[in-house]
Image (cartoon, rainbow, N blue to C red):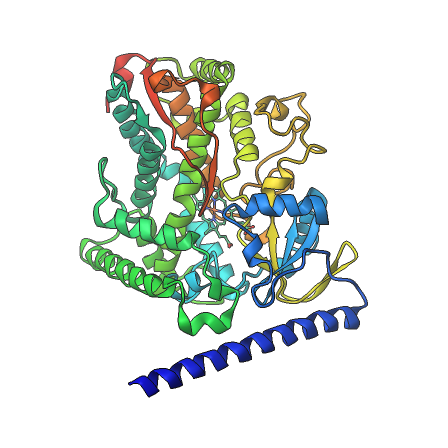
Amino acid sequence: MASFLLITTTLLISYLIFIIIFSITNNKKKNNNNNKVHGLPLPPGPKGWPLLGNLPQIGSKPHETLHKLSKTYGSLFRLRFGSVTVIVASSVDVASQFLRALDTNFSNRPPSSHAEHIAYNYSNIIFSPYGPQWRMLRRVSTTHLLSTKALEDMSHVREKEAAFMVNRLRRAENSTAGVVVGKEVNVCVANALTNAMFGRRMFGDGDGGEFKDMVVEIMKLSAAFNISDFMPWLKPLDIQGLVGRMKRVHNWFDDLINKIIEERKIEGGRADFLSVLLQQKENPSGDQETKLTDGNIKALLLDMFVGGTDTTSSTVEWALVELIRHPDILVAVQKELDSIVGLSRLVKDVDLVNVPILQAVIKETFRLHPPVPLLIPHTASEACEVAGYYIPKDATLLVNTWTICRDPEVYPRPLEFDPSRFLPGGKQADVDLKGSHMELMPFGSGRRICVGMRLGLRMLSFLVANLAHGFDWALPNGLKPEDLNMDVEFGLTLERTVPLVARPIPRLDPKAYVV
Ligand code: HEM
């Protein structure tokens, strides 16, 4: 036994030494070749550690660390995460070179253990390689699941879930401790999505049972930083134990969704995403280059849930926090909505066609609190030149929208919450959220722009509208709005460290709240 341990340890140490030497010489060679062959410098950047590169410098709030580095190295700089070259874009000009001028070259994604072990080996949209499968999944999603008509057909589901939420909040009227608003919003968004996907609510009002536990684990793993994604030679060791957890949660999800699919086969079709996808699999429409597989269907539904829930609910929470901190703006939103909706019913989807103040509040919330401050990473399919620098093939691109949204050259008084920038006469009056204005792109831009953007925007506007129109808001325990903790936690989205707890004070006719 002792000699077995000795041999294993010796082999492991030799393997590590070999990897260290190989990685150092390989990185040097790569950099020299890059410079020599193309005669262009690589973007500047801080020196990294052997092997780990700049990983130890990134910290728990990468967007803020990268923001600080951009002050030293400029709006286009380079890092190394393990063996991966990382390029960071932190200005409107640089971001538009990558995401507009060179969009096709930067439409790929880096390898990801999450995509491999949870999302059916890259069968999803988010991490699908740029190619026929990705095009097919985007087409199916935009044409059949998230088209304007499909979103309108689903509006009653969102309205019903919002009514449940408003009703729960109304019942908390007399609670002096207040309610954890983000939790209520999260349950509402999650149920609206599972209703759209599977035709059923899967989160109870108190606890969400098995599905909720599974989702929480998936969300945690989606946000986790797996070191072997950057040091592929560490893969066999799974030193953080993440791959084991990913495989377990994948099987959990797979069992659950298989059960739902089997039930669906017995019950017959419905008008939800699952039925539409199963039908598309049997009878594909158009001349699809690739066929939709069971793996694609499951991975796509998972993508939509993971991509759509926390992004939407955390932005609603931030918007409400800002409205509580700026009571005059809350009153302006309420007046705008009262003039359209009155006080006898809740806001509906169709009411939100012409609501400039609400839309300006949403934009300003996205600007100060972008839920995805570093866009999902892109990679360079081919080496190229940007701003006089050499960008190597396979380099990972991070776009720091958090920095872009706080650039004082673009946004005067950038730390102030001031929706009037986006109103007629304001400096950013023409800026929309659809990815054509690099100064505000919470959904990204170019080919990889968020596929659920329209659904996300509708849910978000609709929920903020109902929270603002349905209630006045007070803080418990004499807390003053200006004393609200505004710290953030970087994860799957940029969440509040301290969730908002507030007291909803109904302001509509009592019958408006009856579900
Ligand atoms: C406020 C809500 C949302 C925000 C802020 C948001 C943000 C984003 C961002 C920043 C990206 C990456 C863009 C890039 O790579 O450059 C993305 C991608 C994606 N989002 Fe969203 N999202 C939201 C809602 C949704 C919803 C509701 C869904 C689906 C129902 C969804 C599904 C996806 C998918 C599938 C992708 C991958 C697109 C691709 O790689 O081609 N998102 N989202």
